[in-house]
Amino acid sequence: MGEQMITNELLKRYLQGKCTRAEKKIVGDFLADPDHTAVLHRLMEAETTSLWDRPEEVEPIDAAKISEWQLRLKERIGPLQPLVQAEETQPPLKSKIVAIGRKTIRYVAALLLFAALAGLIWSLMQRNDFKENQTADLKKEIAPGSDRAILKLADGSTISLSDAAKGSIADQGGVKVQKTAEGEIVYAAVDKRASTQSYNSIHTPNGGQYRVTLPDGSRAWLNAASSLTYPVEFEKKERRVKMTGEVYFEIAKITNENKERVPFFVETDKQVIQVLGTTFNVNAYANEPYDCTTLLEGSVRLVAAHSGKSELLKPGQQALVGNNMLLSEADIQQNLAWINGYFIFRREELGGILRKIARWYDVTVECPPELSTMKFTGKVSRSQSLSAVTEMIASINKVKLEIKERRIIVKK
Image (cartoon, rainbow, N blue to C red):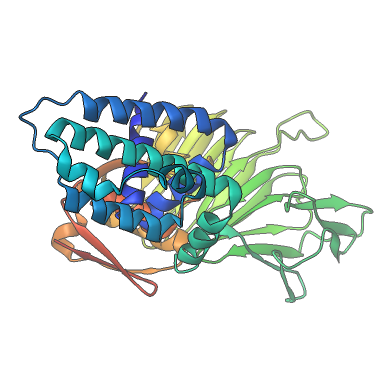
């Protein structure tokens, strides 16, 4: 029921020319599914009944407004050919309205809405005008990030992973680097010539993300503006990588000849994380006040670079590392929202929200300090255009967000 009510309102807003670009996309996505035709018919019937049953004291829609609306509908969705042909034998709409009472005026208005919506359905089935207009509007939008990254090889050469073809893209001293059909980078040893002194690194720009399977079988997902440096073959005693930005890890469990776990270390500027086969997320952007490590399963030990303090994390916990180290229960859904394709904010400061948005959409932000501490709660897909995200934030009427070229300007 909620979706139907929202869709009904969006359809009326679209017909009235009041939809934002983001709302146009929602309407377009909804109407692109043929199964929604029945839903639209029910919406139209409900609107007709609602207008017919209004009490007499409700202010009626006058003839001029109906005529203006009809003209606007014709301009927006073109001639309603099947319906217009059926109405040609009837007296002109305006003369009929003048001769009848208020209740009939409301009924005609309801029929007009019904006809307009039916015409919209018919025109969408017959023509592709809506999608063409929608595409033209979206060309002006700032698109979300995508799978983009640069791979730097041991010899200093670089490969654009978004441009590289599927299949083998490099040979690093006996370790083949391959790009899968899904766009992931995978390392596979083909002989024992690889050297532990050879390192590769992956860097994602603002507006980029990427996945890599490391030489030991561990997997890493890089968020926007992140990097991961690792050897093309790990040592037998330990595995060690360095990172910046935000990376989600799934560490392969490896044992040595004594059947002991081979530890995996993740280094950032603020901490060293020792892992014994586990799943966790590390947010270590330089422009954030602290590193945030969130543990899903397994166990990790953190050592703060500044103080040397050490703590063992349990599943479901997070550690905030800056000048001090603080352990607390983690909001897993919020901290890992980016992996699942969402922004989730729960009483989060606007400044932090805008930093995430800036990285993903590759934009800059101008926000007065007094507004950056305001807290917001919300959820929106990372696949939406930038305007859809800013409109969600501005919808609570505390701030205004204006997009100029590739800048977000925040105002009261």
